Image (cartoon, rainbow, N blue to C red; front, side, top):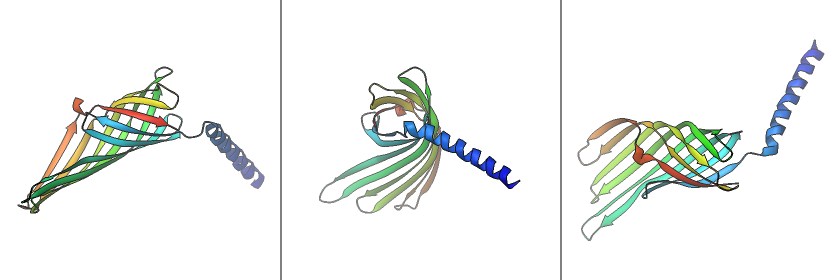
Length: 184
């Protein structure tokens, strides 16, 4: 009985080792790039292959950074956003792939007006990446994608203590993004 269990464990171990060895020959790919939405908004993107045609993706973006002022008052605002998801790729032909997958996200925004009023906003949401990825060179690719999403935003103003909740769901063609990335 013990030999039987040891034999089964040994066979399972060999099968797992063979599966990992087969994948290890292709070694996981890493990708880093810049993602542009319009001419004013950009994110940094990092992707790591976890399985064949399945990547973990991270997006980090400066939502906004603005400052203005004169001798009497200054106004400034800043925000940061982060998204993490799983990207699946399906080959259409040799160089073109369809990409899709879920991507949770969050963002924080802070504004100060004339040193008196302060506004905070916190956003969480989940989106679904839909797009196409074109490999134009061995180490470079370009992709176009949109991320329809459901988001919840909580904002608060210190000036009047006003708090607001906002729920949004939908797809906007203004949010179609172009990514240029390097694979290593």
